Amino acid sequence: MSSPGWRWTHLSKENTRREWLKAYVLIQTEGAEPISEVIQSLPGVISADDLRGPYDAIALADSVSAERPIERIIDDIKSVPGVIRALNAPLNRRTGTHQSLLPHARGDEAA
Image (cartoon, rainbow, N blue to C red; front, side, top):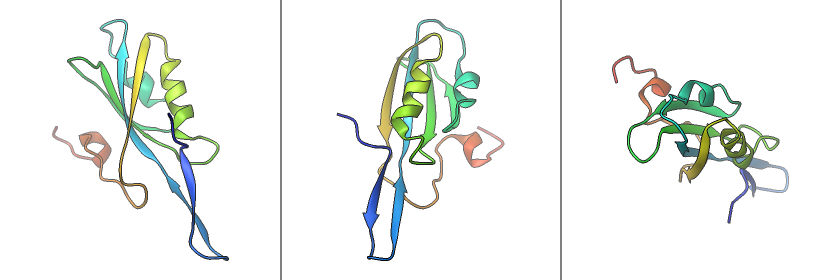
């Protein structure tokens, strides 16, 4: 069961706010070719890295608008040639700034 990329949280009659969803996406591919540059170029993807192990890449996705929910970003990742699976892992934090675990997303020079 998938959840929407955003939801309305009612604050008062005059004021509402959207809570946007961020998620890590674990990606499996058919081949051994690096894929992070292609994934990172997709709208809604903040950063991506190639991995070793059971998953070939990881991406940090952010649903930046109601028109681009997280599910649509996941569908875009799945449509990249060679991608056979994309597992969505939503973050518990939904509002405020996000400190990424991926070094280049934080601006760290040394990884």
